[in-house]
Image 1 (cartoon, helix red, strand yellow):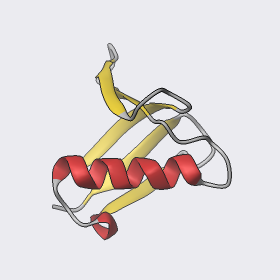
Image 2 (cartoon, helix red, strand yellow):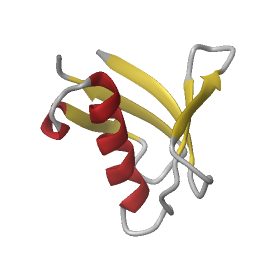
Image 3 (tube, one colour):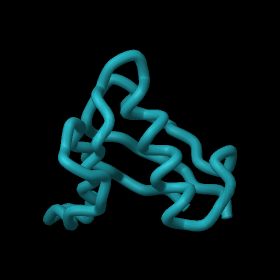
Image 4 (cartoon, helix red, strand yellow):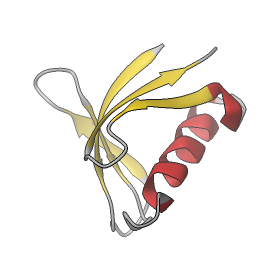
Length: 74
């Protein structure tokens, strides 16, 4: 399953925060966007939410952008 995401780092807590008009999911992350910390936190957050191992979540595009494409192997 592929997910289009808009990530908002430095939030008070990590949570889903809605859906944009084009279907992109908005996710707030507590992590800071430094040295890949926010990307790592995103993958762990999604793995926990979808109840899959962390290795089953893959960042396809957007490593340095707020807009990301993530693949979850179910």
